[in-house]
Image 1 (spheres, helix red, strand yellow):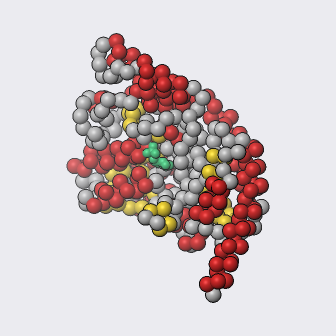
Image 2 (cartoon, rainbow, N blue to C red):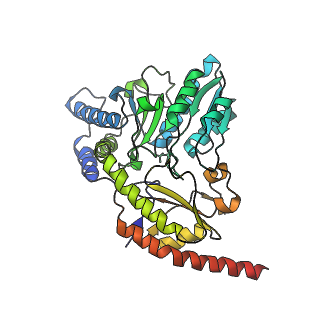
Image 3 (cartoon, rainbow, N blue to C red):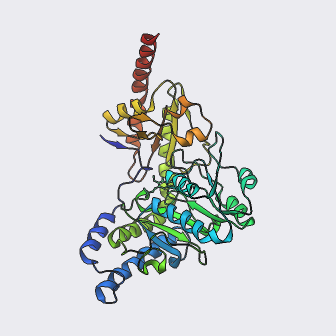
Amino acid sequence: MRVYFDYNATTPLAPGVADAVAAATRDLFGNASSVHYFGQQAKAALDEARASIAALVGAEASEVVFTSGGTESDNFAIRGAAEALEQTGRRHLIASAIEHEAVLNTLKALARRGWRTTLVPVDHSGIVSPDRVRELITDETALVSVMHANNEIGTVQPIAELSAIAHSRGALMHSDAVQSTGKIPVDVRALGVDLLSLSSHKFNGPKGAGALWIKRGTRMQPLLTGGKHERNRRAGTENVPAIVGMGVAARLASEKMAGEAVRVGALRDRLEEGILRVPGTAVNGARQARVPNTTNISFDHVEAESLLIALDLEGVAVSTGSACSSGTLEPSHVLRAMGFPPHRTQNSLRFSLGMFSTEQEVDRVVALLPGIVEKLRALTAKAGAQRV
Ligand SMILES: Cc1ncc(COP(=O)(O)O)c(C=O)c1O
């Protein structure tokens, strides 16, 4: 039995998506910009997908711009807004310290080009405080970027309140909704944002497709220059099959989200309760304001990487927030930003569930973990004793 509990990394395709992608690849080969029949067939498929994606986030279809995924959407939102606002003298950007690298590294790149950037710290809850944003925002702030749900701990941020603060100082508000879309209701008007990033492969659509929702009238500099695709917002021939697949996944998400949130939430809670029976475990981040599919748990005296490998050997796929670069384990920037000590940033695992997760899978993981943790703790103790 293989268990996949890494849905926040990527998701398997929803039923019907692979067939829709295959059919579009085969039949809708026309260039959606062509005026002839073949082009118009492709364009009609794009329009249908655009409408389904817009409906999922309460938007107008004409405000949805297709991109290659979440990373491009985040880059476009921040660089596009920053460059459009450059002449106005607004050269300050704010983001939370727990954003995805697609946002953090974009801010770093702009900082190297003279932009002033501020990262809003968070506390143990992993929730951005509107008061801190109120303190840090100035009349020079061009954009505030705060994710809707965090990818590592699942916490949901107070976006509507943050949008009001951004707007009160004349700044734009961007939210990376890559990890919330399809899991909890996302409504661009209720959130009050100007820009919202989406990624198809996080809600059971294919990889290589995403979208940036741009509120009508928002001035944006395109990231990619070229032809007049996507109403001059994003040049390049559209990836029709991937976008068609994203549209099917979006429609399914709209239909099933309410029921799935309850089902998956119950599984996550069952998993969490089971794991917390292991001594020396704790949940990272606020447990109330979370997407229903995610839990991030620390295991005292265990290297998360060892636990991940031991679980993988048993057929269970989970993830650490930390990235392993050139052989050195980097602690999770999210847990570090939350103020956790180094050992806790390196002993935490993320379990993220989804569409195909079952109770049997949860029970298997809950049954496996105590033995694995005990074994790893014994090894750690032994290695410690040998070092003394
Ligand atoms: C919050 C968040 N933003 C952006 C991304 C990047 O999305 P993509 O993989 O579609 O480029 C991810 C993916 O892990 C994410 O979790």
